[in-house]
Image (tube, rainbow, N blue to C red; front, top):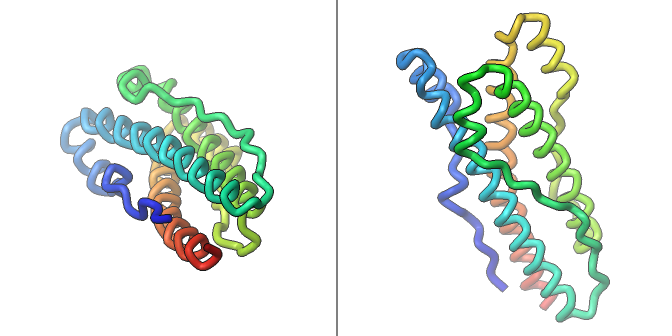
Length: 177
């Protein structure tokens, strides 16, 4: 069973390029940056659900116990959220939700893969949401830029790690067939 290893729609986002472009365009480029970040998140989570279904089908074929899937994706409207950052305050809610969603997604993914395969393949990342909220409040919002930088880098790292996990899953599923 071959799993898709690389999805060009899940490209990494170069924060420095987008940030410099935003400075040069007086913030206008933040809108497509947030759009790409949210859209990439949605695509990745949907793709992850398809991958999970493939693993469940493979486990059924092998008569192995099937882990309970209890994680529900709530898709974010990329256009609406990207447009809402013009009001500034929604951008902080967006950063919070992106941080929280990635953390919950990684924890769920780790539990699911641990139940399906005994081999350790995935190490969830951590982001201290509380720390970034305090920094953002203490700096009167300027810390939000650093928080955004961390969120973008965590999503990039997650996408790269996912490609490696899928390679390993393909190898394990073929070896156990």
